[in-house]
Length: 243
Picture 1 (cartoon, rainbow, N blue to C red):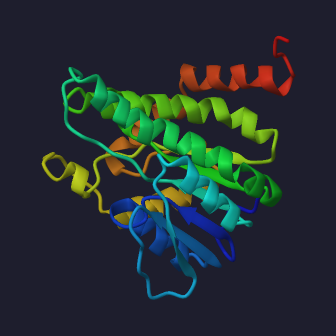
Picture 2 (cartoon, one colour; picture 1 turned 45 degrees about the vertical axis):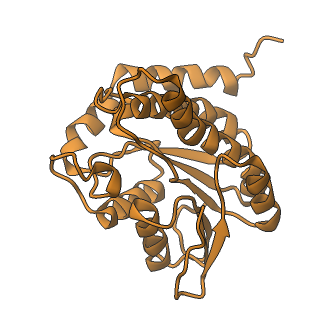
């Protein structure tokens, strides 16, 4: 697809606050023709280009209903997620994080894949720098985001076969409700949203929307693990899948 947002149709999950809310505003600023603002509560917006969508990404019925109602989609932004402080002693807490941060985006992507394929569109998965470097003060979140990062990597060559690209956002500390008690330098949600769409428009596989992650970004993009990911992707491109 032409990765500029001008006249594109965009769906942002978790659009009622934080980075999600900022992504809706930034998509509008960049000229998106239609923005679906999805959340578990109805999003109210004054711009006529914004349409609210009631969507709990752990509810398959709601996902299917939304996919039936949205027939055209150029860009899907999987932003909705949770992050609760824990110590990995409660399996239920880990399962909750996986349900929202891993299986939620998985189900949403597959539900909207026909529309994205028709548009030659793109998917953006909001991940975390904790996907690469575990943050043990919030371990269930770290585990779920690492799994979602692997999902993103594995889907990249598989979605490419449908003409759909996928981008992983390695979010750093951002001034949102989840990080209010975490005393480190943070960027605003607006800064993050701007950097995210800059990365999408540049066609970047991974996007690091925080200045403190610039060195990590360069190391990752030029590193051996990224090189191996590209090599392994050729197995799909060559059809080297065991029957």
